Figure 1 (cartoon, rainbow, N blue to C red):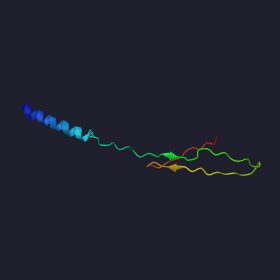
Figure 2: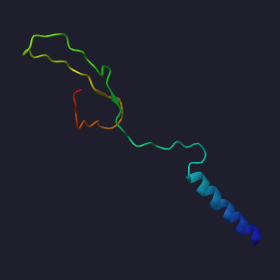
Figure 3: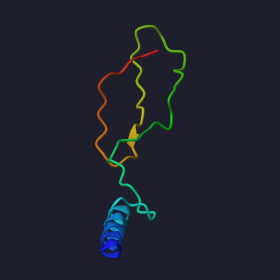
Figure 4: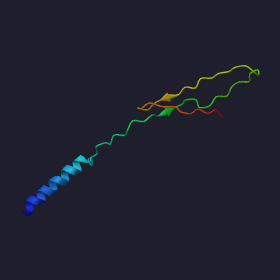
Length: 75
């Protein structure tokens, strides 16, 4: 009787151990965005007062979820 209970206990422990990913099963990380800005600063050349100047900053999402930009501030 003790051997049967011990065998059942051992089987349950093994099943729980295998299901927990203890044998190197990689845990899935949730998808997340990853912002990449190759040029984070730009120095404008000297211009005549009142002249409109523009510069495009490239922003890339290298992650695996949508990137949401909520606020933009100028320095």
